[in-house]
Image (cartoon, rainbow, N blue to C red; front, side, top):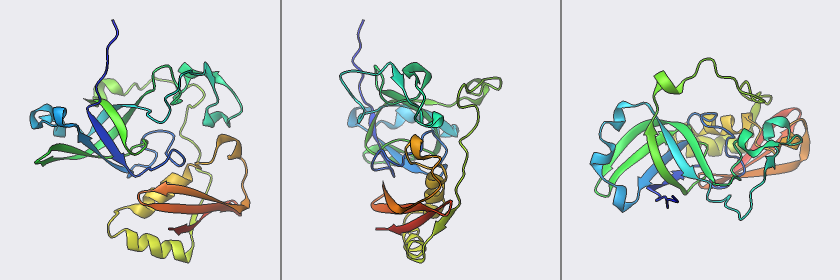
Length: 234
């Protein structure tokens, strides 16, 4: 029997475009988000006792990856973008059903006149993503100590030191008055090298400036002398 899912709310995150989003949850542990429920589901009793859990699972739709056809093979960034694996052996957003899942930190639940709002951290999800469900994270069952990680057995290497230009540092300091932990968020985003997989082994691109739309500014940066230089936050 086919079932038509309802989205229960919308996730508002600091990641305004797909480029630069961490490739897994909690790689940028301070990346903030809020989950705002749709009116039908914005009921305080629906989240009763949820605040006793430190983390929750989000089930969501890759709404910018919906296609009429889906690939049976994909190129995971962890394999340098050169080797293909089956789509079901990956976390690619391009799937028969574009469903994603992430375990994120539940910072707090704000009760408003419009219903509860969940404040989250550690997200790896695009802004304005529709959410279809949330579930509490249970350490006693969700942590599988003997699990193996296939072609991604360990966290990605953080091969770059992140430097800030004087201009970028001044802008970051000013913005941190309204965006807590901004510098650490920028560092963690860039440490994981958001460039396409085939660029990961290129240690210098002094003539190329990359841009990531983060919060409400453009984060501009470059790879030079084996490090990442943050140019400005415009």
